[in-house]
Length: 384
Image 1: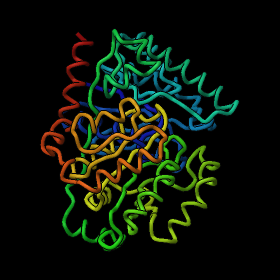
Image 2 (image 1 turned 120 degrees about the vertical axis):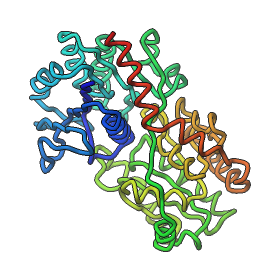
Image 3 (image 1 turned 45 degrees about the vertical axis):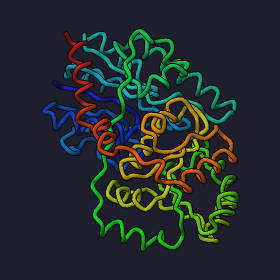
């Protein structure tokens, strides 16, 4: 099967969406399919075309940036050629260019499947309101044109303004999750580098420093946590400098974070590759995902942590709460409520044995090969 995957950002860009797309594309290749990823050349230093783990990646030059998105005038022309060459088109939303690609799939009689990752919710400025309106309009056009839509969980679908419109052509499929096996030496070296044996318990957060991630909720919860555990520390994995569209948010939080850094209670790790992430999780006592709005639909990092025996404390957002509810490894806190977050984290830290799960079952449920098979069944049904 020739599969065309279309999305705005692909690797080396790091986000839950790009990691999902990369894992699924690699799984398709391992199962014998020919996979092409069409994306944008968001960084001019990236090659226009390359092979990555058996996946052919084609990047379309970018003419301008708009908020967190890009404008690529040649996208439609390249899409016309590639859609005609493939058997099925998989699009990852939110994506400005999705309706045009889905329309081309209709013209060429190729099934178009949308993988819907999250609702878009930008900070409330007049310009972002315009961006929200345009992207939502584009998403809805893509939804009308697509043959089918995939989302992570029914919980998220039931609460999404977009997905609730398309219940008749919707299938929940869990996301693909995998990590390299961490060597004891790597885990120990990570512990030594970040003094996780001395500064315990260790609270992990893996995200961009962005407004929707709820970093300030964790900051507000820290005093109560430190009162009971004076040596606790936060290890923050992910981009925290020059995050697109988040400079004002960063400027607001950094003075408080710097104080905790000086005291040894907060460490920025920056972007970690998969091998480094594999050493990161075993050094945690708990992971938290205190996200604030529906731009977070699941939190793949929760499953990565659980696969390493680490419980999670997410916010009660639809979809985001499901990993803990499904697997019992952690507690759900109220959205935007620092007192609830602190109480939930402390409860997990006080009785970690209570939140142990079936790791083998979790790994099997999210195995990329299993997820690729679910997509194959859907693709084949639509093609027939």
